[in-house]
Image (cartoon, rainbow, N blue to C red; front, side, top):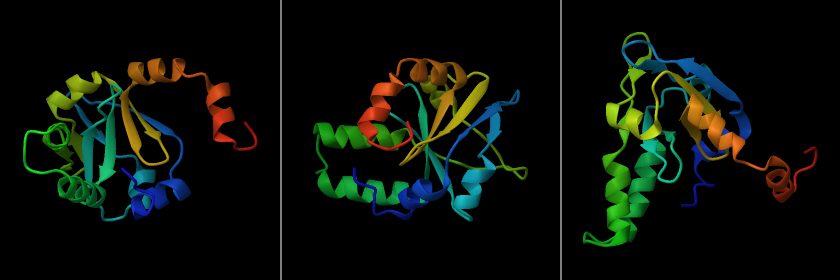
Length: 158
């Protein structure tokens, strides 16, 4: 899915970086990091399953709306792998609803999918904000050969 023309992609490329750790409170609540909110003032957010890794992905609602519109225009309403993939993704979206203190609860089925029990890492990505259970983040990063990955990027300074 090409998202390079979307303002969400441009803003993440230009401004969002770093990683942010939070601990869920006893009711499984957390907050979207302030840096993300500053980039997307007034935006609503949606959590989605990743599909490959044991993590969640945070998108703006406007991005999800555009992605679903593009995807459904490519898929016929039938029993095809593409329509099933759209159904899987759409049925596992969580529209973030915050309380008066800016907290939200990750739905139980998404917590189970991502292995979230206590600490969460919000990690910047070029085209997404990944949301990992802390342990899963450590596993994912430990499995990467960064020297090889950075060499493939062809960016100076690595």
